[in-house]
Amino acid sequence: MKISFNKLSDNARIWIYPASRKISNLETLEIKKLCDDFTDQWTAHNSSLKASVDIPYNRFIVLGLETDFNAASGCSIDSSVHFIQSLEKKYDIILLDKMNVTFKQGEYLTYKSLNDFKSMVKKGSVNSNTIVFNNLVNDIASYRSEWEIPMKDSWHSRFIK
Image (cartoon, rainbow, N blue to C red; front, side, top):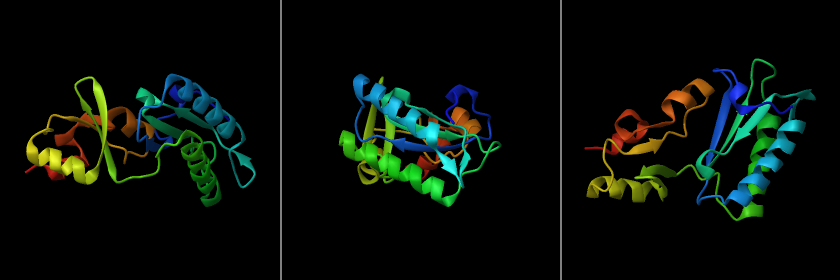
């Protein structure tokens, strides 16, 4: 059962899928429609789930689930991953590779492998004040306060010497 993303409660569970490239405006509209269709029919043990999707910056797919209504099961989480895999194939985009970092360089978002990001830190191309996206947050409250933060305040800080 689809609900508005901004209506998800602070303890709603989220999954963040960073895109390997910017998603075009047309693709964003198409993906949003596919996501809405998915969340409308998403269930756990034949019980409806209250869910929503946001596509911030045309660079991330954020799936939110209102766990106070019904929690996801292993099978329902698997179905969401299969859905994300179908988007990867349809749009020739990587969404499930967690060994990457997305960060801001001025007004632009940059997507790099973890090794490339570490090299950029060593070279001083990024620093402790660089805004990074902490895709490990797992609830809406954390998403709102700890997702888009300076590197020094994120798990990425371990790369700073």
